[in-house]
Image (tube, rainbow, N blue to C red):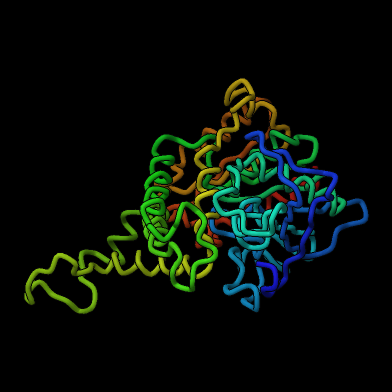
Length: 379
């Protein structure tokens, strides 16, 4: 929020005479995008790499926790000097998406008409809208063409939209654990989370920003995050880590209690409460809806026609144990790009950790990404 520590963020506010039209027909004024950069842009602008973050990520892809950044970067160990995405070679940019709550215009931002938070007035945005807003930032930074656009999960959705919407501005793409269009099951998981928030009376229809501390929709958001957390890991990881153990040292010999927690429940509650401390509920809803609406074929004569527009060489990474975005979806992306005559490679991460493996198994993610970025640079 304005007045809070900004950390390493930089900000771009769109010019007053350049309103931003959303895919849904709404026009926004005074849009601000928060972003961070690492490295230096070459004189010819050819070494720029865009990182696209996932659902509850932000612009802080790498760097220590500090005022304004309560946690280290979300891809720490992957981005930095001498790392897979080498900031001594590449000019790396990461942008907080439109609709977010970490500096870019979102539901908690002041509405230009009255200065009060948007709240329930904030419009639905799509992945395509997020990418078009990022394109304006690229213009501001002097990046006419990205050497590569890289992202996992929702970040991968942005990667595909970049390559389809702006094929002349993308030199290569790295799409990780993502999909070309959300499936019914993926939408179903999102719908359950939205209903959990809607049922929290403290959500107040989205207009809760004047509530006293502790009187916001924290319970609804926590439950929504608990639901999502189940999809981020695999059954084997949950079983190996928690089994059927009861929490708090309880045993069945002490009598049965309906609300006696299992260890896995305590784990889910921890992650739900952890998100409440750093994320806005309305942003969670807005971004989640954008993911459910994701379909690169919308308005483009279908999926095959849309994917055929990709002209950038592609590296597609899937995860063997991903239950949220199963690896058949990444194989489909690779096959559709290749069918259009564009070079596309598929690499599978062998991990028990499920969807979150792209944030955990950097020993498997880093080498193919580093090699791909290097090879594309020599084409």
